[in-house]
Image (cartoon, rainbow, N blue to C red; front, side, top):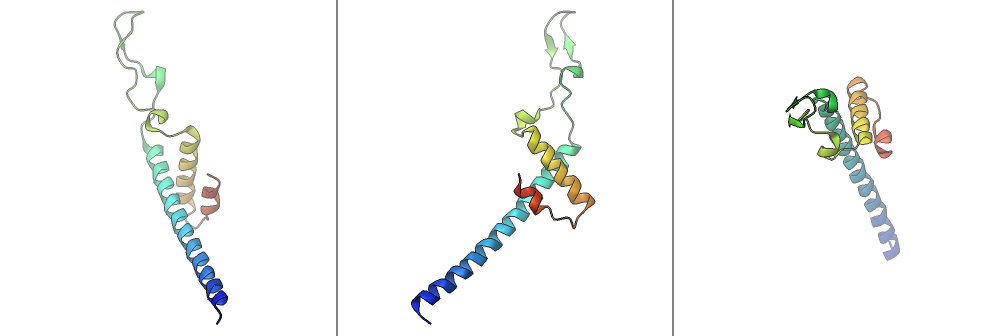
Length: 107
């Protein structure tokens, strides 16, 4: 076997190992996103201005905040990330055999 043949063989093995690592990383990412989606689905939602609160007077400022539940933005999650995570969690629980890797690649 020539030197070039050995190099080609090593490159093929390295490419296969890289693909395996990428598949494992994608599976870990999918599980992490699904876990975040399960948490977000069950978490208390921020109700914003409809949450009430206690005012000093009829037109005064609020003594107590209306809602202390953190918003998605305060936690560092966009609405789209929240939607995707909850969708993945729902798909994973309803169709465990469903191939979610293709969906996660679009994220």
